[in-house]
Image (cartoon, rainbow, N blue to C red):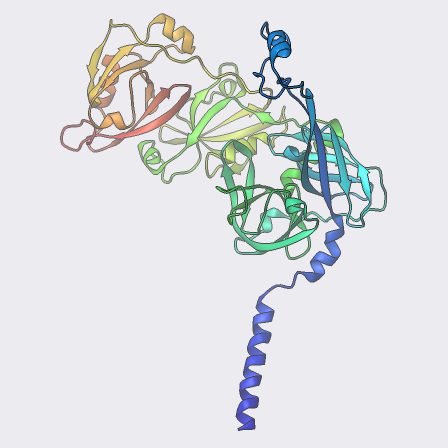
Length: 469
């Protein structure tokens, strides 16, 4: 009996040992690297335009300001107040340079850094970059513990990672998880291939480091996806190589420069790839080329698909802004294109990105002259000279009415610029182009909807040649 009990106990012990070996031990990593993580608190002076409780939100120059000032029963409230917020950061050099998020310190009037040994320092903002959400600050200290940057490209999905930060102000909180995905694109974030993780990240973690199991920092915790405001299992980190490139530029000049070529692009779907004769959906489809831009000077055209830029493969459209943005302005690079069923290579000189340009003027209504019913159930009119001038185009067809299944993709006021690679200049030509497209084929139309120009795909019915219902 004792022998049996001993055997069971031995089996349980060995099972526990095996399980322990499978689960990571973070204690040594935290002991060695935790001291390089800092708490960041900021203050910001908020200037109120409202001068007293209950008073309408009126500036001092408003004619009714004096009336409410004299007759409102409440006492005058202060015109400014101090707002405080918390975040995290980590030391990248022994002489006090610290990385964090731009949204943590970018608008701050005062920045205080607290180390794990409870020392506090006033920090100076060296610079920040809104597009990547990276900021560099500096404290006056020496001999500080610092992190070691890792290689985000070597990360594998499913790999263990660890985050240290100050969620809700709780200093040096440690959470762990795995890499859920790499190269994530988020809305309005074109320049960062985010690392997605399920490590618990909450308000206050922003700007803190994400470690791999070697104790190297491979990302800056920046955003969470949440419907509640708190952690829901979807956290996103800026790869450290992106952050360090920004840091080096901020230290050198206090600003960040990026490359720009002057094209609007869209994703190549399977239907679009088929309509352009591409073997697989990849690359970035050019839907607009800016006049006078580096792309126009190089001969890049609407409907070209950019497959490679400076030797780097463009797998999806979101890859292109990152690759171009990371290219030094003035660099001469080669661009591999897919044009009219063939591969083509052009050379261009990368320009420097400045402030975002205003979108093209909105398209107004068309005149009643020149209307005609085209194929696909479309009622079209040719653009007037005034409309061409407003849109800065030489040709195009205004959609006056849509019938049938095409209404799912088009609507009144849209402008059709091209069918596939062919620019359309008249309704007769539009119909002529469609005659040469086989029934049952998918066709790509370059369409401007409000301020956005992109390709849409319609499928011609196999019997009638009209768009399939």
